[in-house]
Length: 373
Image (cartoon, rainbow, N blue to C red; front, side):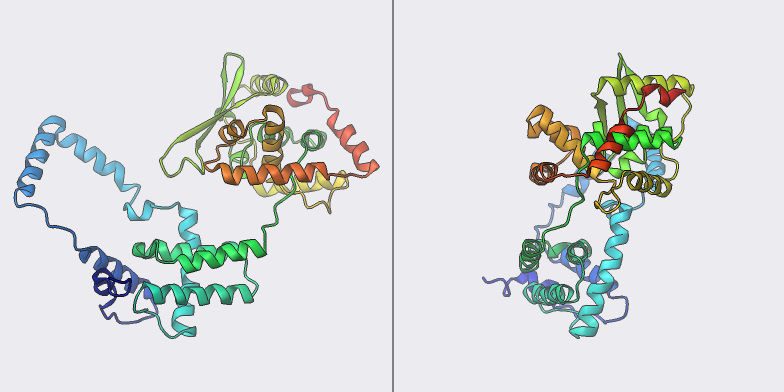
């Protein structure tokens, strides 16, 4: 049986839906139809009785109190379907699916394809249109991912779209921010200290040593800095890679001088709970100002370069991809290796002017006592 002759596909797409401006309702209707027409075997007649017996046993064991407690705790999460992806991803998907619906309805005039093969062809035309219009690659990926999010059955049937996106990535490699060398991170921290932003300087040093993401760096609070037998652990909570399985992450500060700075900083502030970065926008603007003082306005340096530089520095010190992946909490070694290999090339080609090198050396020669005086 061919792809188009599959009864699964016929049962999915044979239902005629009324096309309206809110085509998402049609997609949800198709998804519900898909679940009804999967052709799965019906459960035996005694399955319901076994389920009821299991429920009665569980009710006797745990009582109604446990059920009410679980019910109340689940109300704050909402439905399971809404929690498949994070809130930020859902917002991106909503913006992307509007583009998909507009293209299918207004441009192609065929909002409900006959089968997944035709659906794949229509979305390939969308990708070609985005390519010619100069749209960025991440937005094109969001369009396809949002379609698979709202139509679960489309997963695995849009291979042509993903091949086009791979070709797009090959023709236009992503432009990544240059990594920060260690001496530059220390110099920026020294510049922040000179301006009186002690917590900002500490966030930069922690972000570099612990290979923190930007959102993690700007979210660290003093209560997240835990002292354990002379070492410092940073509690990160549920991070990017731990979101799917609700895993809590933490990272250890390895630099001994930085550990001493953090310990003295906490003692000086009386263990008060406050964020190191109170305003992320002001944090970025201040760092941009310090980079300007160093003569690096046109170097293309961004805050995410702290993580890239920290990962490369860790690899140079350990010569182990596994150690870098564990410290940086990367789920994929492939993505991590791409970061490190390109970053090492950038660091090898790094050339600053004599004036910039002089200022970097001057700003980086600060005293640790400035953090707690």
